[in-house]
Length: 143
Image 1 (cartoon, rainbow, N blue to C red):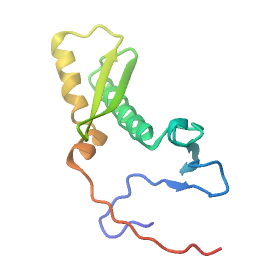
Image 2: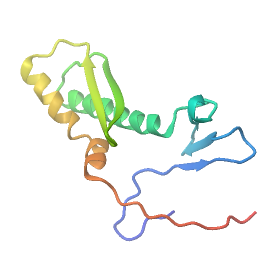
Image 3: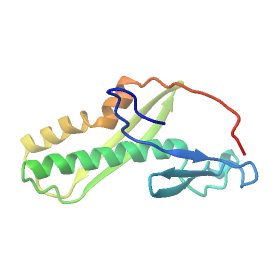
């Protein structure tokens, strides 16, 4: 995949699942990083790695924590440890994410309000809230 014109590639990942591997195991590669994805045992996987939904939540949590750290550094705030606890829930076929952010440093009410505002404006938050178009191509790989 290559950028065209003024297009900017923000991230790239390659995911491969081999039918000879344990059921649903996925090998994920992004740059020099490698990890496994899988499905929980209750749906036939082997729980060898996070599920796709868990990976999505991890992306949101990581972006939230990192964005808060960047903001705090620019404003010379000590946040201490930032923990982002996320749940994906479904009720009446509608999915929603619950995100709880906790900070160990003592912030005042104005700072906490600003932290809450920043959480709503992280890049992954904005992407998920706005939706994103997905274009899919399918081909036979050359061996």
